[in-house]
Structure formats: structure tokens, C-alpha cells
Length: 550
Image (cartoon, rainbow, N blue to C red; front, side):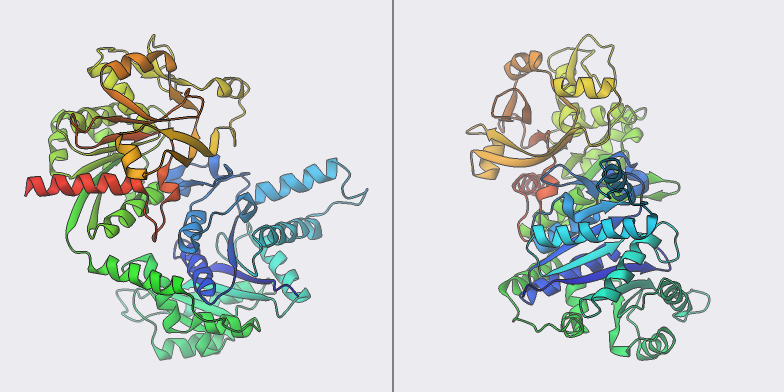
């Protein structure tokens, strides 16, 4: 009989304390015990996918191989588990309701009155089972977005309750909750978590485990207090203090034997720790051993959220840089620079000389473009290793066209559609979509094949002639300018199989130590145990730059 187990991870007290990392870590631990595990994210937003969400509010949009635009937690699941996921592993309130309405219109309910309960929970259950079946998994770890007590996720909690009632031995609940230590009091407080558990109880759910997030490790007294007032075994309160790296979290959980306890509650037995666990521990050891720093500037525009900095908008890029630096035995020092700071104060560009490498990530719209173009020109002329991703590649091509080819009005259709020299133009397949305002889920999305040019930096980094990378864009290098750009030194080292789409642009190593941009998003396929070759090549060049400075 096929094993089918469900673990729901919910949040209490506040958001942003690590439900996604807890989900990924729990899945990683159970995978190490020999089970086939997958993970799923339930977002409570009415958006059908994450593609239309503002990155400064929601964080990065993570794109899967099949083109689904998802929450950034899906990236954590892929990176921890080392497997690609599909759109079946992601759902939103909007996606669920849209599906139910479409079924009702197609008479799939055979004339029944379609109600929020039970038909919405039934749809959620169907999607959860589809994800576990399509991945041929035995255990699925499901993160429910938001925190308990919110109206938005109540139907997903109702779904989980219904599943627990039907199959009590197959469904388990984990609550991730924050235990504050007010500085004026100096004592860790359990009361917020007690209230969160009672809010969860009010939905008919009792947590089996509490992941107690805090600044410092939980003491025995706090565990006993949570056990007493939350109706849970003291051993099932798992201490989760702040750690140096999110990749330490699975190891930290295993100090409390979380994997064994979960398997026991699900009436499963460990199948023996597999080799992947030792490889993971070796990776963590290497992360902590790295001391020599390589200094990388990330120049973007999605950092500001009020008076705070939100680096989550570029989460996968940050992690990809970490993996490659670790692989090379270095500790990355990543500095966020706002592109708008380089628009009027040209003298600020001199600050860039203090960095070993400069990365300009993807983005949309006019804001910050002038600053990014100034940064790119400075990096090119001062031989600072440069890596441009998506928009970062397009702007590198525009900068080159303006300052090397002398096309002063070279521009992108996205930011200046009136220019006579649209070096970056809208893709032909996108024109009708934009005209009809069909924006959601309509970009060039997902994994596509590209062919690499022999002798190029890209071909040397990958070590193969063909690659598959994930895309998310509407604009491309205008084919009418390819010949002129190449004549002046740009090498389009990666192209679509038909030769029409420019996937990678670079400069010859004799002209610049590392100046390369990709139309795709290589960060989405960088994993802790398998760094992305282009990020590794970039960090290598930055290390060389650092040595030259010292």
C-alpha cells in the first residue's frame, strides 16, 4: 500500500520568522531518512500567481521550469530538496477560487449548489493530492501562508482539519511561533505563543509540534510552560534560535531529533540516513570555515520598504552568490546599493572601486535606469567584474550602444517607446498580449534551450554546448542591431536554437576580465550542493580583482 502522509506548517504570532525555512528543513530531514518528500506552498492571496505582486511588498518572484510564477519559499524548497518543483506544488486563494468557478461554469458539479464549504476545501485537497501523486512522493510538507487568526487562511486551515478528521494517523501539524525577549524585561515570553495556539485550537486544530523561534535557545522552563498551556509534550517543543545560516536549521532541528519524532507520530520508521545528509553537513562546515571575504555590490531598486531594507526581492541571487563563494572557499560580503543614488551624484561612482564585483539584477520600469547605466559604464571602463541578469543584461547592451557605438538615444521599448533606436524591443509574441492588457502569467516564462558559442566565457563556465535556463521577460535585444553590436565587440555567446533571441552577452576576456549578462535568471537553478557555473565564474573573477587590489 502506498504511503501518503501530510504535514501542515502554520505560523503564529508574527510573519517572517521562518515558516518557509522550517518547511524546507523538515522536508530535507525526512528526505535524509530515506523517504520521497515534496513540499507545497499555499499563499492566501487572491492573486492567481505571484507574478503580479510588488517585490518590495511580497519579495522575489520565483519561476519554476514550467513557467509558474511563485512565492520565494518555493525556491527554498527546491534548494533544500535538490529537486525541481512544478505548478502543482503551489496554490493561491485566487487560483483555487478560479478553478472552482471554472468547474461550476462547465457543469462539473452537476447542478449542485457550489458553496465555500465544502467545495473550496475539496479543491484544495484535490490539489494537495495531485502534487503528491505527480511527484510520486510519500510525504508532503505543506506551508500555509500567513499566521493563525487571519481571515485569509481560515479555509486552508479548515481543509487541514477535514483531512485530519478523515485520516488521523496521516496528518500532522507544526506551528512556527515567535517567543520574544523584551529588552526592558530580559525574560523570554511564552504568552504570545499560547494565544496563537488557542487561535489555532479555535479552528479545530491542535499542533503536534511547536517550533519555538527566538533569539536564543529555549530553556527547560519555557518548554515546560508551553507544554502545560499548549497541551503538547515537552519533547515536541523544538528550540529554534537564530543561527548564522538558514542551512544550519535542519541540523539544529535534528539536535532535538525532530525527524525521528515526526516519523514516529506518522507511524513510520527511519530507513537509515542517506549520503545526502553527510554532503549537507560538509557544505555547512565549509560555509562556517570560509573567512576570506569577496566584496560584491548588488545595484537594484527594490530594496526600500519605508525606513527598512528588503533584500528578499533578490533572495535567489543572494543565495546563488553565497553558494559559489562557499564553493571557492570565500565568504561573500554583499552590499545593497540603490540605483537611484548613482543618477545625480556621479561622484558616488568612485565608491564602486571598493568592490570586487558588481551585479545588476532584474527589474521593471524606468526608476533607477539612469543610475544603473552609470554603474554599468563605470564597471566596464574600470574593468570591475560585472554580472547583469535579465534587465541587467538589457541595460548593459543599451550602455554599450550609447557609449561605444555612439547611438546616444539607444533605449528600451519598456522605458522609452518613442526612441528611434530601440536596441531592446518588445518580443513579437508579446505585442498582442500587452495591447489587450493580458499581463498575468503571459511573459516568456520557464525553461528554454540555449546554444553556447565555442571559446566564450559562458561556454567555458558551463562546460557544455547546450543549456536550459529559466526566463521571465517580455523584451529582447533587437535583431536589427545585432550585427553592429558584434562589430564593436559584444559577443552574443548564448542564443535560442533558431538564433533569433540573444540569451547571453559578454565582452572578450582580452578587453575585460568579466563582463557578462544573461537574459535568463540563472539564480533560479543555483543550489547549495551545486553552485551555478556563471555565478562561480563571476565570483572567481571578483576574487582575482580582490587580489590585484591587495
